[in-house]
Image (cartoon, rainbow, N blue to C red; front, side):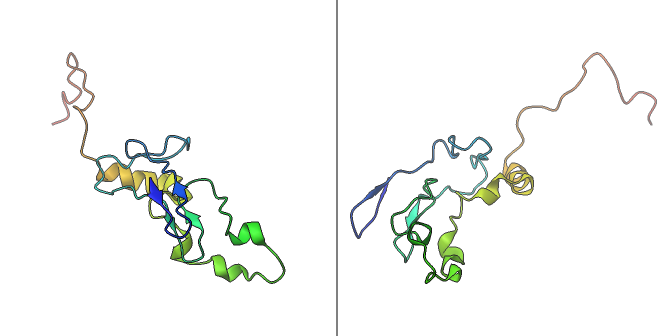
Length: 118
């Protein structure tokens, strides 16, 4: 758990065994060398990375004609490991390529598939 310094509000981390089981398509970061990071509070007092997307201070919860949408742009609004972008096939492949190979390749011990190929 991480705590918010201003109000000492506790932020629940959605991380379990290097993945986020509450997201059906969430990839596993286990054995990739990428360490999953806990949620953080950005400079606007908005919790980023808790998967709730419902911070009291969020411009989305305080929207008006006076709110400039540009205020919600930039890295301060993106969590490095709990971001929807990790659910894309390209990023999932990137994570899988970082994992060490598992087990032995599939073979047919009673069939020589290379017979006559040399």
